[in-house]
Length: 337
Image (tube, rainbow, N blue to C red):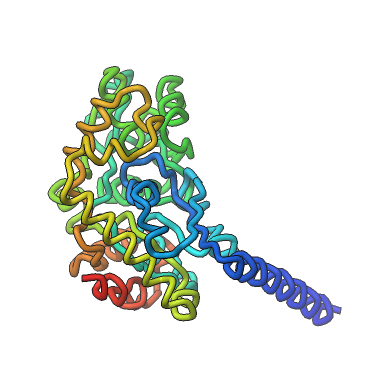
């Protein structure tokens, strides 16, 4: 009876996987590439919407649809389900997924620093270090997200044990701000423009700043490649022409960021992204755009830092041999160069 049930469950799973693959292939066959962005209003993922605004996808003959998913872990799930062809999210998911037997790779590396800041609510001046997080709630975009990874790493490094800090999924933007205002979280990790909004109103202060490469090195022990375009390796291998076109569009976008001011970049973005404060948005861009690579190439020392960070706290990584060379590729970006 058990073997029959097992056979039935295996057959059912195969049907679900086949249906998912067919749906993904059908969407692709229609001539559209769908990319899930882990919150495209976030400045760390700015290249996605900027490439669209500059017309670089169309220049490559691509019909690209950008979908918004505030938490990177949910975007990752959409990729694995075959609902999208790529994700604009953190590279660390590529390392984490290999430990789970899934092979995805960064095709274009957007940034070489997380662009994240650990904020402390102004209501809690007693929190002066990561060690003081004990017994408090920490805001992250989602459980299993990159902000959750980084929060767990810093807590572990500060000597805190699992359970000392409660991770609360609060997204970014208005939901993050509301959670801090309502004291649902006392600390939290977020990005621009949310950072500037809370600093401007003096509702929060900066505890750990990873918006620059130097800040990332101090907090994480090395260069930390973060925002990227990552895709399933099998899809990349089967669709090299379209992958190259995506790389072309995104590398051109990174060059634009590297050679233009924050004001010039902001003018190409949807006005609602300013959240009523264009001056603050531009200022944050000017201060933080150095986190972006100029060519989409993975920093040579970056993957080892990411592996070290994840291995320090993640049970998924224990006893696993990770082949970092399979978590990213420079094949396509170097052809653009």
